[in-house]
Image (cartoon, rainbow, N blue to C red; front, side, top):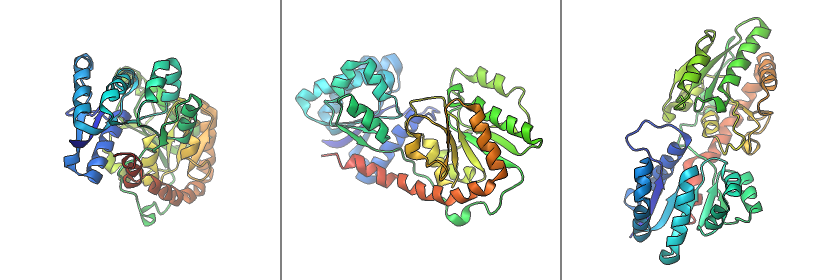
Length: 346
């Protein structure tokens, strides 16, 4: 019997760079590193309705052949996969590990009481933050362990950080390009800062894949932007620290109140880059306000603008944060994080 199978949205052969796909791939890669290729298999859930039709047979096969089953379903999949596995496990007695991506599960359980009951039957649920663990505990779900987000990145050395502050400060976003991620806020804040200062003090580069279905929105948004606002496409995550070290700060003005642990913050830490983030659910567990970044009230464009104006006059504040960001990156190296999951395997 093989030891481990990872069931999730791998999107083999597809150009996918969303958080669900990336973390699913990372989990499998790091398990293979730790346990050996021969002990870890992968099952891709891509396929829509066709995959749904054969899902019961897939789950039965996995239960029959593996002692540890790791699942990473999203909204729709969790309502099917968790109940079916919980039922099958009455007969197979396997260790089922549910790795949650994002911060949405507690509120989702409130809408779907059956999910709460079936999740209690799993061996362990791994959430990204202590807030999520507390929220689930409040719902009576206690088989929960905190396993923060992680990435295998090149963490810069202190001597690789920028030696001086340039006259024009480059800032960026580094997430999915979609309205809900606050991209428009980032643009408006930079444009407003430059207007108030009367000079081009800031430029903004936008990185990331444009969300399917929002291409027209983004095209309309960018059509009349000044030259200092530029879309730069997608960066391979392995190159993120090399790209990001050239920037002054990262902007993360998300409008999602249930953000879990944004992987983009780890990218920033690895490059010694402070992050200015909106006050989403668990951000205060990840960023230390005034030490590794700045946190402002969600949806408050004036507050974001004020932080940028302050930093334009006090760039030394950012320079003092950079070494602390590099230190923080060490907390999220894959070996430390994946050991949390492995420790629960039999």
